[in-house]
Length: 155
Image (cartoon, rainbow, N blue to C red; front, side):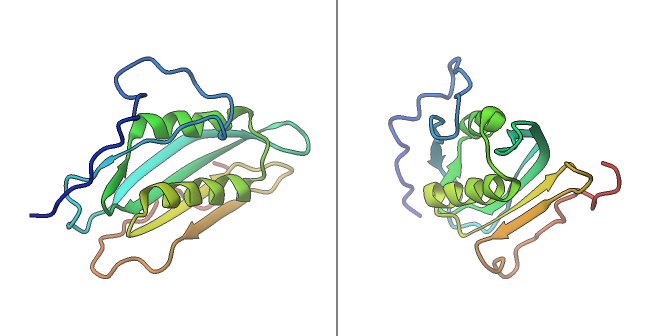
């Protein structure tokens, strides 16, 4: 039997009211032990209403984020992920920085076997910017579905 890591004792957001953090730096991501650490499977989170702020104009930017990862010893606690993603609402950053920065923060916390993120951004100035990043090749024999967001055609 695989020995599971102990949960962080400071995962305090789950099960109680929690205010939306004012910035990604203020937000807290929590992890919980993976009950199936030796099993190859994909977990997906989709944020269809992701919002951030253009760092130059201050105008809102909207996108769809799809995060796929193969857990190792840890899972992301979903409430903390929702709050973290919501904290970008008032955060000024380019699409590339938001997308890749979120992925790298998750990789640092979870140390997954594999992770990819797709940032499908709505157009500003007449041009959508879609951003994709992954940690490397997907594990052999992993069922990897399409992210399900169509290329831009007037989303």
